[in-house]
Every structure is written in C-alpha cells, then in structure tokens.
Image 1: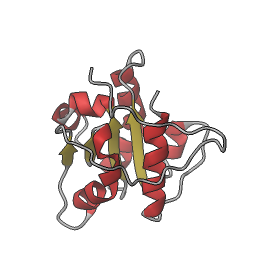
Image 2: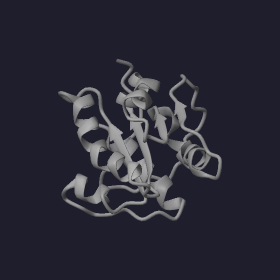
Image 3: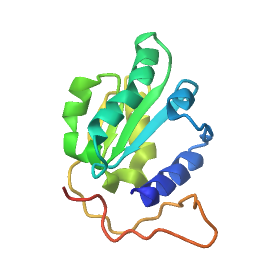
Image 4: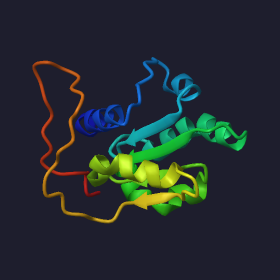
Length: 151
C-alpha cells in the first residue's frame, strides 16, 4: 500500500550511507540491523498489532543495551503519534509520511549524543519532494498524489 514511501525511505537511508539487509523474514533482519525502520499502512487489517509484533524483538535488543535505532513511519505512526512511545518506549523516531524527506535529520536528532525521542506527525505542507527513491522496477514508478491516507 505504501510502496512509494518505502522507495523514498530506502533512497534517503542509502544517502545516509546505510545498507538494506535483504531478509525474507523481517523479524530476523531486525535482529541484525543497526537501524530498524518499519513503514506502516493503517489500511491493512490489524496494522497496529502487526507493528507491535515486529517491534518486539527490536525493543528487546535495546533493553539489553544494544545500539540500535528504531524508526516507525507511515500512517499508523501518523495516527498513533506519542501513544507509540508510551507503548514501546524503545522507539527513537515516530514520523508521518510527510516527513520521509527528513528521516536523516530526525534520526540524527534522536540518536546523536544527548539525543531524544522525536515525534514528527504534525501536518506540514510539502513544497517540493527532492528525495531520490530506490525504485523496485525499471518500468514502473509510484507517484504521490497525497502523503498519507488521512484516515
């Protein structure tokens, strides 16, 4: 449902020098990553519960003292906002889809020395999207007509 945002996020993360861990089982990949980003879609059935299931192993890593950054993006993040931090305090960044182009800035704010949790869900006007998506296809591209689903 949010392939366009995922492609844009992947491009932004690669520009930060991060590499994607290719893993068929997302939970297993999350056990090895330095940055775990879950891009959510609230239209899917049980989206919130699926998110919490995916965050469980990563949150356990942080509680053990491992250095891992946790980002929740997308429409569930937009709708839940600070409630996500109350339920899973190990999350570093909660960001709505309109903040995809600022993931570097938000992640840096949350993880650099003395950093703090960041919730970026306020409505914002996107004047120009300069992100460089990593396309999943050579013959197809997703084009945003809105950012998020406004549910």
